[in-house]
Image (tube, rainbow, N blue to C red):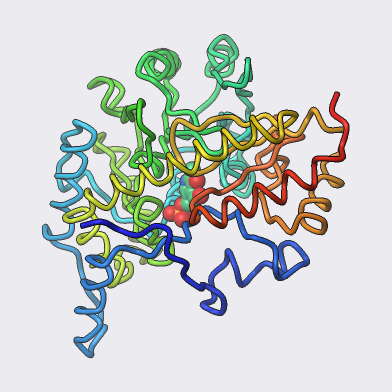
Length: 392
Ligand SMILES: Cc1ncc(COP(=O)(O)O)c(C=O)c1O
């Protein structure tokens, strides 16, 4: 079956954050929304059918998850990531961001040091700060338009840190960390007894030429210090269904995490999220492959367009995710002016790089999970906005 990713779906007035909060977020209700990380593609038919079929039963009472829910996750991890996991290692969690917060609460104490690698997804900062832990920045290094890790600094920082929150693959810089990079992180964290919370929500959105490495799966030792957060939500566009998994093989860590979920009475979750997750993992692979092709073409289109028409703009080509990280630093703007020009002159709603912490100054994150004609429109507007601006 061929899926049509060019199809336009009107999302206005569906209470969706991306479109219906434009006035609140950008002060303008008609910017092209290329910000929050969900996609403008319709959720595939086999997921909609499963949800509709369940919705037709007229009672939506308390439900539980049995092996029909867990087995597709187990099979997916094995077939996609060569990762063998057991049913009792998987803990339901209503979201990956909640999982970040619960992990901070379960595995650290107020005042403990937690390492993150900015520029990075904003809830990594709040999950640490909101619980009065101390943020330690292992700044990524940008060299020739690609990002790497400062391992020397990490080794120093690990000496008195409790937890590293790893974004694997990384949002917003799009790195799909390779095995040797992850092994270096593992070596440092094992040596200094630092736990690793690996946020792998983008693991199934890796672009051609790259391969996702599950951090926990590097070795038996790494498995024992790792908490993995995963979800079908980014890949299959299900963020509104609040369904994710935390996978922990170390029994002590697992008990600490699941006790928190139980105490908060969050284990029940959302009936439709379970149904959608099962359908996604059982039937989603052909759709996912076509999605990756379409996203990759969008990225290629943007890359060629920018090189040809906006040579002063640098695009960091992602290895995973549907975000492109745009470097405006050759144009002489401060961050506020850049943001205002994009919104009010070009009518574009991007995420300012400063939202991702230090290292984000002068950057914007653009979500390209839209149909190609929207992407062309947005790039054309960007070209017009920047065409008169001198570069240095
Ligand atoms: C790295 C990362 N983690 C987590 C999330 C969101 O997770 P959830 O919606 O399951 O809370 C996102 C969404 O953009 C993300 O990029």
